[in-house]
Image: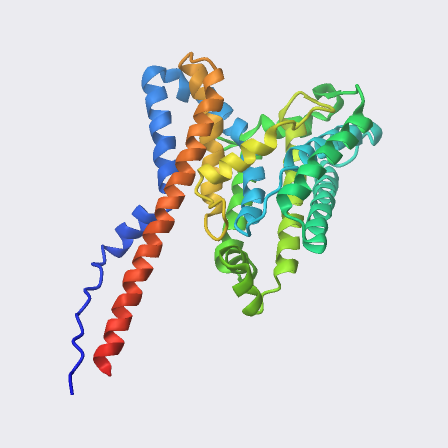
Length: 351
């Protein structure tokens, strides 16, 4: 009787866990890119990080950070929302209308109405996706134009300007606390809350499970449709919040408000390390991605580079993010294969 020879398979060496975790963080590339961009621009033009310049950078990124946070909830479940720009436009114009039609209305009520309005629009998207079982890309591409058409019909040629809103509302984008504009602090709070929900709660972890393998999530007992519907609802609510803050931040709102923002929002999430195929990524990374993309505009201006190059740079960043994600996926698959080989060898040895 012959005895089968089992060749021992060496397990991969484990690096220092803390350093390894930092090096494997999906937010690391965008963080390095952001620091390098700010450092190089500051070296060329020290006024780039003046108090007013820093405040402008934060204000410019605020709206995009909130929208990217909502988009992250969807992308990690293998969904997407291309109508966020149109939703923001509708809520922003609705905010201007409220201040004109209901003079003296408390600001907090305006926020509540705006968030509920956005949530309603998000619910429409969510129902169409989960009930009709049509890809979110197709559904939200359609609602992008539907919501935009409604805004065009509603606003017509009317625009509301800064003079139409109360000073206290406009001051949200002017006043600061500890050097941070108030509306930027709101965006940071939103990111912190969503990060805790995604990491520390069962519904948040379910979203990652759905994005990793929807069929396995169903077998595991996760209510996939309900989770996805809530994700669309939350994304709409955040778009509503962003719409109200947009009305506070900018001088005018009208029929074209929010046009073209949807692709930048998706780009911010992807550049921030959120896997376009779902299952991984973080809202903090998406926020950093939004900050990076909006900083590029300011940096190009400070460096006196034609803004034409902004689109090309954003495209290169998206391609780089997808390439890094693909390489990370291949590395993970290779490690899993080696790990399975080691486990198989151990089982053979124990027989």
